[in-house]
Length: 75
Image (cartoon, rainbow, N blue to C red):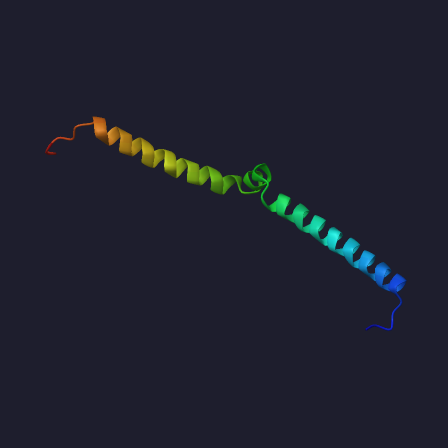
């Protein structure tokens, strides 16, 4: 099988397990940072406000056009 004694193999397995746990924790931390809504909105405030403004204007125009009668328009 292997030339390494079982004690050395256990130590190697423990080190590998510890390294894996650290890697998973680091990945979770990075994912939490990327998906943080408040942080992302704060970093991209101008874009978020621009999109909200366009959506608001479009919705307002659409709702208003239902109630306003334009001359020459057929109903």
